[in-house]
Image (tube, rainbow, N blue to C red; front, side, top):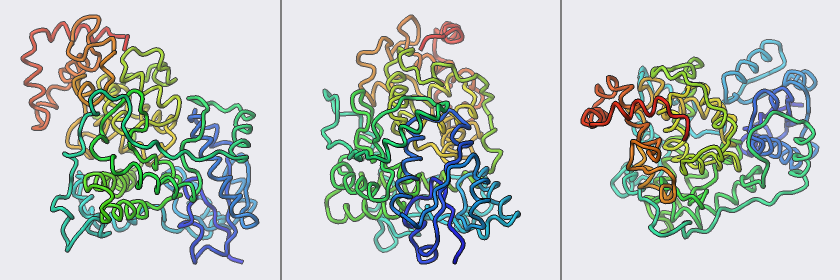
Length: 491
């Protein structure tokens, strides 16, 4: 008999286990108690991971061996030697290498859950030390022939991001878009919930209904519903925020993609097909393709390229520990409507969309100098799609600019004017996005100028941010703003 196939919890799709090379293999799935209790993960994240593994074991029937042990090693010692695909983190890769050296792993196979192999990325990257996502994105489109015609991008333009930055429609509280498809829960979900209650693990967030797919069939259903009902509306308002519309027109596919249930090329091919049939406008289709085939793949590759020490980078010398209200998702302790809404979304669902992550949560952390490694860990623990490979490039690089520009050409910081333009949060907020001084001064607006002053030399040397420093120098009340923000404890 061929050696069993050991699957990690983010390798659950048929393109991993139901292939010609693996179809006759026993499949091993392991619940490691040590991993479950290693960090204060979001309660709903633990539910999704365990539900996904147990649903796959149920689908595979006698082919699956499901083990609940204290450690991965204890499980593999019982069933090994095994074959396994490359894991998606340095720590797991180190474990697999040790087990292989001991004869418990027979073969380590390439990762099958991304479009571009790591070896192909290394060839593309060559000796580059800094990277531009746009360059990588165009190479991905060419390589996989997505939204291309005769070697050129359809419509003559690679990137339609400029058409996908509209604020929310005036006077609405929710988009006029069909809601996301919600998977029905079943007896397996009930069992996971009971077991998590009994384990009494350290968690953050609250338990709640399952919003994300945990089986391949559910993932296909979510994809089909998104492409047919929501993708046509996705592009224009993908950067917008509404207090009463947590999902907007986003796909909610990050969880099934990151659990390995859905292959990224299948997702982008569906979007491309809908565009070519005339059902989806090009800006929406291109925006989704850029997220999945561009940014997601880019982050995956750079996790490995930048190396295991990347998470410790802190070029802006941000040392402030995360405050308890932030770490504990205490949205009620926050006055700023945008920040409170984002924290409530993480608390209630373990998810917010990318602008809330970057321009609200990340922007706040950048302005206040939160430690980037702590912040990256927080995003990994508190977000249901926050696996180890996801967060260092997204948080340390993109959000906090702690890598000094290896990933992004400028820091992403803004005042309250951006939030006011792109959301309805400011309308009833106690803070005024136009004010930088006083009891009702917006902490994002005042915080932006304090942050700009703190990093004025760095920002002045970057042509993309030099204007901010010039604007700061024209402020007549700068000293008062700096004094106010140095003492701010209320957000």
